[in-house]
Amino acid sequence: MMKYLLSLIVFIFFTIYSFSQETKVIEIIQAGTSIRNSSAYPGATILMKDDTKKVILFHDGAKIESDISYYYTSKNSFKAHGRVIFSQGDTLTMTSNNFDYDGIKRKAIAWGNVELVRPDMILRTDTLYLDRVSNIAYYNTNGTIIDNKNILKSKIGVYFMNEKKYNFKSNVKINNPEYTVISDELEYFTESDIAYFNGPSNIIGSDYEIFCELGFYDTKIQKGYFKKNAIINYDGKIISGDSIYFENEKSYAAASNNVIINDTINNSIITGHYAEVFKSIDSVIITKNALAVSIFERDSLYIHSDTLTITGPDENKILKGFYDVRIFKTDVRGKSDSIHYNQTSGLIKLLKRPLSQSIVRNLSDEEKNKKNPIVWFGKNQITGNEIFLKSNPQTQELDSLLISGNVFLIQKDSISEDGYNQIKGEKLYGSFQDGKLKNVNVVKNSVILYYMHSDDGEDFFGLNKTIASSILIKFENNEIAEVSFYKTPDGNIISEKNIISNEKTLPGFIWRDKERPNSVQDLFSNADKVLKIVEIE
Image 1 (cartoon, rainbow, N blue to C red):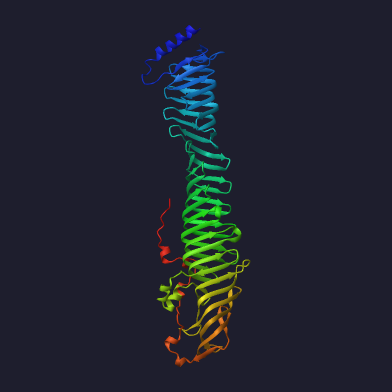
Image 2: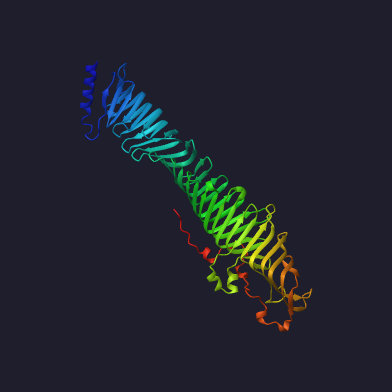
């Protein structure tokens, strides 16, 4: 029997020598026995194992072991069955129930419990197509890849052996003890464990969820960069932007271009050009056209500045804004250099830019007031060194007002064309009713200048200028309705014919109505509107 087998092998090599000097011939290394069955398997040599030997074939660096192989000499191909083991060096081993191989095209089909093993991963599927020319393996019958801590599943997969890369399509899923990835299409590199997304994809971690249609993700360290409808949900804080960078270990995310941060817990939204989120310390910073919106049942508060930060846990959120701060709400408008807003207590602080004493000494009263923070309530313009607004945390309606240093309240007179009612002092205490100014008390070095008319407005009595230690003003519908003085006021009334131009205003008077934002769009300066957005990679 052995002599017959050796003669058969010699015959096979002799008959196919002229087949092609470039095409390598499939070699028969060993077999338990061999037979021919021309009627059932025309042109095939049937190689079978016995008790001591399995069938072993060799072609171009690959060894194929099986229980039985049907070897077609003229076609330089074979079909193997039983426990088939395909091995290529010490880097690739594949087992299957069945294996068809074309030695001319160097292509194979393995099916039935296919398992491909490389040092960096294991692939399991029902049917696998192997192209040894291009070093590509392909399946479309659902596959599972075990790689380090990751288990990857997809309906369709292509494995590029040279690049050690997979291209997965349709129902792609990566299971990891710390997260799950679901995608329509992704590329995965087995050595670096980096996934590239080329279609709608979700990453679901222990405390975050990411969606994108384009990007990459380092599955080892949970770090990535995402584009095209990119969104991160950070425990109820939803971050979106044209591009998002993410590092789980640092609890950090950065977004650029058309950034929106929706805080569903605190019912607020922040938008801007660039944002950074530090989840572990409950901190957010957003810059370039930054806008924060606190959404209330009856109204919303809009705050714009060059840079906004939000810090603190949900029960004690602090918003800070820097450089050209502007606020807009139905019952109040404002402007300052910086802002401090405690969203829990409802306290807003509007602050001016700190200046050195040498600069302050060289400024006129008007220039000083120009740099002070300012608020508008209806027709009332109020400025001062520091402005504190307090809202009711439950109703979010304005509750009280405190202004400290260089207080200046101005209201355009409702009758005269160029007249302004004015009040100055060192401190102002105000209260509100139904969101409107009710009472204002100006204390210390207080002075008032206001136009006196008859109740019907027909007669002008004169211009009243009074100095007092304290002045109480009562308002109706944000209009001055009553003025009271305390501790021996000193004043006089200037008749209309005796009024001269420079007596119509108090020192430091400046009417800043053109700065008042009357809509959300007015919160953005001309410089904001022409800002050239550069994508941050």
